[in-house]
Image (cartoon, rainbow, N blue to C red; front, side):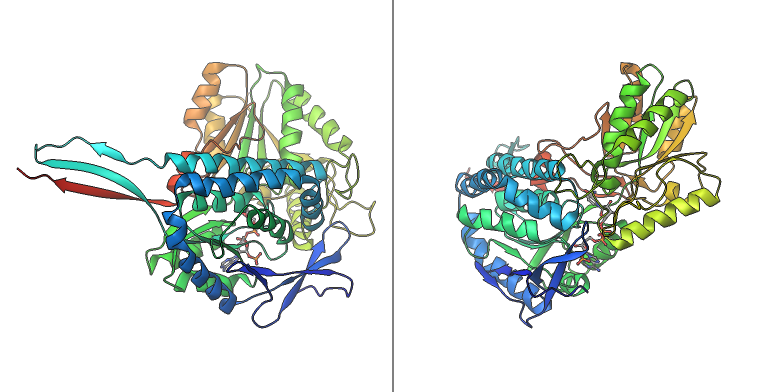
Length: 486
Ligand code: NAP
């Protein structure tokens, strides 16, 4: 656990409409991965704080769910407006706590503001149905009902986006929520909460707790007030939480890990494909759940593609994300850096050939910088082909036949995203149908917009965020049966 310097400022938890210290007074230092310095202290709560937050959310829910969707939308829309107004300030915080370069932080905040705005509107479309009867005396319909108090747990790689995908639809549906961001990236979310408060958030409707994951998680699982757990994070923790939800039959949504294939067909320009591949792979240092992490290139264009990605990777400017022109920041934490070193060492031991990068950058005295890496001579048993890599490493393999590459791409326990680069509609369509992934990008390196469903197949998760499905995740369907008088 990091300790804060005397100069670091201090942020608090937000429970029942108040900024508060942790019940037992604990705090945690948040570290800037570019400088390894503590930039701020945050109150670090425990079960007692999580319980207070759940109780506040339960008290707030009856009045919040009784508001019309139009009234709830006002708070969400105003939040979006304030996030855009405060873009620069929030972006600096996000870069300092997470490491990503400022342009990526701005993009994250804009996407999150769009998410708030979109769910403000979509909440108005929580339609039920009138269903035709079999007997003249009956009438049947469905109406929608909020699932109840939600607990939302998210990781560090997109601290604002991943909470926005939970908070916005939950509130739009009439639920109330307790948000638990990753311990090391709570600060930008604090600023989003400030926007929500100024937008008119009633006390208790959204609460923010930070603290040891297991402690808070146990309270969410064991306290019957919590009716739904929405989790984004690793497959391992997701499975554990899903088991924990079974005891009280809590609703659960799981957005988990991925290992996305990126497939380049010979009909398309390999250099253009390489540009997209470099953008998609090295965004946020590859620490993205939908990051492409296995590159299958048709043998006819493999040489040109590989040369172009190596050139692209070498040109990327590495540095502190606050500086102008920086395209790749530090990795998020020492553990992530060590894991990347380990993956690359393992690949080298198994015959992998490094074409660019391959090591921790020696240009910096401080910070967790790893050089963008491209490697070939890749084999299926390398760790980076089996485990989710979450690293700035691009393994390049070649293929000849469409059916073979579909088989190779699907040969994983994950099924979150997959990418195809082609101009041939038939190929694109066969790939979209054949690939086992919840999200498919055709010539599109960042397939994530508020209005389309986002989520995984297989061990990449359960349920969808965003899109109308993202609202449905916070709604129960009630069947109302009416018998008329004769
Ligand atoms: P993680 O270890 O599963 O942590 C994610 C969140 O869960 C953090 O808030 C963490 O809290 C909390 N947590 C950890 N153990 C817990 C427990 N026993 N009970 C309750 N909460 C617990 O994941 P990570 O390694 O930090 O994040 C990266 C993973 O997230 C990758 O696998 C990535 O693919 C996945 N991800 C998925 C999506 C998607 O949409 N599918 C998006 C982004 C990331 P602390 O921070 O306090 O430990």
